[in-house]
Length: 98
Image (cartoon, rainbow, N blue to C red; front, side, top):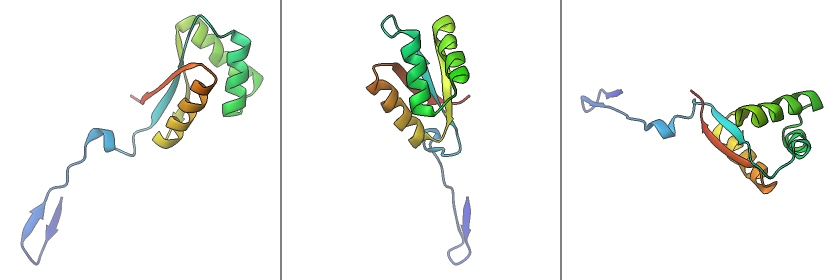
């Protein structure tokens, strides 16, 4: 809300939830019947620079739980990471962090 002393008017600014820039976004990888576990680990290491141990942990979450949040941060980077993951034929999406 802002007040203009010259006109005496108050302006209410509304933001749409999807425009909220402070909300972190999550990159999620989903399990699929096609990609081998070693390949998923390799892709996570290549894209995010994770260690073998961290990439394997995330891959096992995908394998056993059906999905894993592999990265959280700003929306533009999340979009970029999802595109990279999909270019390797992984099932990936982004969502707002809760």
